[in-house]
Structures are given as structure tokens and as C-alpha cells.
Length: 331
Image 1 (spheres, rainbow, N blue to C red):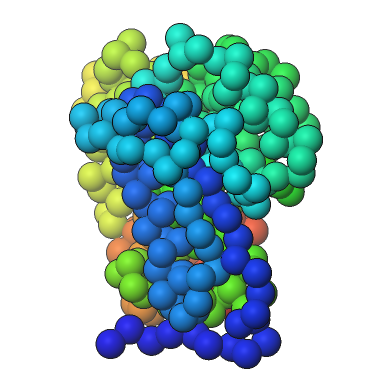
Image 2: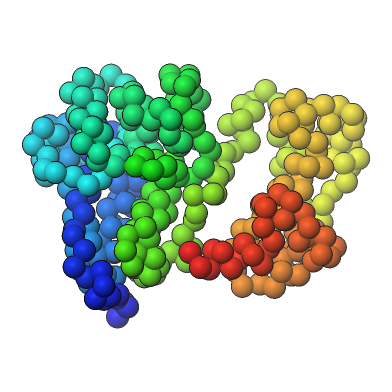
């Protein structure tokens, strides 16, 4: 039986109403990850912390990107008072939707001090309504350039999610679960409830807002740099026993100098720096997802000593390996 939390100090806190506005062609995984996480929080708390409401542009069924159809609880204009509204965006972005009623409604909610968020490409609609100026936001990595092109004045990050005052945006996919767990943890007594909700979801570690989306190199480079892509693939396949720069150059029929220029031009790093960051990213994943000793993780990622590993790790992430592990355990 799942454990639950029943703290008398918070048992009488008012229920928060969370609206999920589903845009036609919305992403089901982001929608479901959010609504199920809120449901698990209610189970863990043994009370209704959150009431969820599915909102559509109208009352007609809304079709998701996978073809599934959802019948809204209400249309935008008939929505009750909300505490939070999350816009569940489409994949790809649907820009031809009749937008004036939607944008005006979002602006009205902002004026009423309703917290607003975007899931996957939901950030696009908040930006179109002019509601992300002065806020940090994020969106799925496939759509970052589109958002930058359309709205050059807003602050866009590559993080999994951003919680900036009363604006909550996430990159989509299961990152919406991570963001929702963090929102739950902000409530009175919410940290323990969020931890129990994560257990119910079989989530062994809720990722933090400091973690970045992993953008495939092919997305950064396209098909224009096959040699560079090949070098990075070799690096990724040889993290435990790093390949020397000379060998990497020889395998790809380029000189060391040419290889260095490629990395500087396209990745703004030296090959050695990029290789080190790959190894440290792998080490961080092992550190936070396993209970392996730091020394074993260091060796598995090509470091000859735990001391050297700790020094490099602290320089990149701003915290020691053990400090990082303890921080995640507390959250």
C-alpha cells in the first residue's frame, strides 16, 4: 500500500484549481505527466490539494497529436476562477489557430494574478500574448530557435523547466512531471508530499530546474559537419578510456589543428574541454541515479583519481560530487 502524508498543519489548506488549456494537436505525454502527478499528490496528501480542469478553446473535443480526442470540462470563456493555468502546446506549433480570443483570455488571467505556465510549446502562446517579457522561460529544444526568431526580446533557456515567479514553463515530455513535482514541493508541507507522489509514479529522482535539456548534436550541427559528428560519436562511445586527440584526428583523416578549429567554430570549446564535459555529464548521471561510490564513478568516466574528478566536477557544476548528491537527496 502506498504511504501517504496527513499533516494536520496543512490538512485545511484550500484546494488549488489548476486549469489545463489543451491546444489542438496538443502533446499527450506532457498533458498526462502533469495531470497524473497532481492526482498522485492528492493521493499522497490524503486530501484534494489540487483540482484539475481540462479547458478547450470551445466545448468540442480537442484532438491530440497522437489522434486521441479529449472532451473539455469547459470552454475558455466559461472557466471558473483558477489558481494556475497551464497551456498544453501543440507539436508542431499551431500558429494558425484563431488566436485573438485565446490571447485576450490569457492577458485577462495575467491581470487577475493567475499563475500561468506552458507545457512543451505552450510557452509560444504566453509569448504571443506578451506575458513572458522579463521572465525566464523554456520550450522544447526543437522549438527554441522558432521562439527566438518570433520573440527576440524574451529570455529563453535550455533548462528542462523554468519556475520564474508566477510563470512556469517546461520543455515537454516527462519534464512536465519534474516541473509539477517542484510546484507541489512549494506548497505548505509539499516537499514530503512531492517525494511520496514521485514514489507512486515510480520516479526514482525528480530532476531539478538546474538541469538542461539534452540537445542532440545533429540538431546543433545538422548534416553539414559529418567529421565533427563522427568525432563526438567516438568520444561518447569511449568515456571510460578516453581516446587521445591525436587518435581522434587520425581516425577522421584530419589534422589535430583542423579538429581544434572545428570544435572552436561549432561548439565553442576545445576538443579536450568538450570531451571532459561529456565525461562529467555521464558521471553526474551515475552519481545522482545510483549509490555507487564516488571513486568507482570517477574510474568509470576515465578519471585516474577521485581527487582529480572532484576538482573537475566542482569547477563545472559549482558543487562537489558529494555535495551534489546530498542536495538532490534533500530535494
